[in-house]
Picture 1 (cartoon, rainbow, N blue to C red):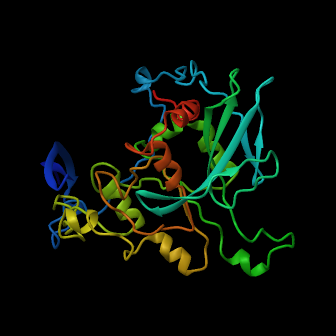
Picture 2 (cartoon, helix red, strand yellow; picture 1 turned 30 degrees about the horizontal axis):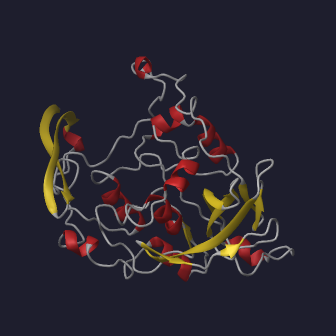
Picture 3 (cartoon, helix red, strand yellow; picture 1 turned 135 degrees about the vertical axis):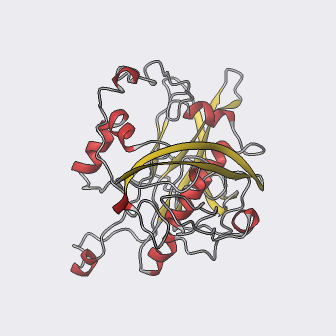
Length: 335
């Protein structure tokens, strides 16, 4: 016997310590009696997952494969420095006299940087012992004075002990290298349509495994990131025909936002416990654990941390540098 079931799901999110209504989605399903779990009062005791066609004829009218957001992107600042094999190289423009210096940027906390000392850059011989390097150059004017005209941020994976030229021990092959790449705010179908070369490279060259049908448990990145990387929920999941409901792992907004997360079960800590060298690199300063003025971690949470790069580039006061922003518009265009 079949029957029709109608129900509503209401989405909310905690914004600045206030639970705000987001949206209500109306759902209607036709079910069979044998799909109902009487003991748990759950109408759907399983999920039927479909393999969707990214190029289904019903959506073709909405697609524009020829669109290229980078087509008219023109670099505003020529790149005259390069970090290669750990050494700084400088490529000045013809008939110019320049002086360059560099310094290391170390992670102090999720929202602060420990600055190294400025050091004169020697072309091809300067070798910074850090992951994030800021470099600036001055050009000699006709008056004979030098004026700042160039700033750039370089990054690398620096290690004090260089890898050995010998073949690694067979014991090292027992533990594989693990890379988790998260492309936020995109469905798998749209990823296949918009980034086919990336998908091909990851699958064919790196044998990567897509997390197909990975479901979200809340609105925006934070609740889903907490679930994936910490194994915890920040918001309760309402009871519905598909779920018996789940209580949040935190009592309130302050529990996960106003307290440091260093004591949490972050997955990177578990890998470190197992002898792995870890790295975390997000593409903006207000990342997963810091968005909306949350304090995140007091100490750097991985061995290699990209946070100083983003803080120096994006900070709203005191740190933001328009010269660096102009130089990076060709890499991170505003569209």
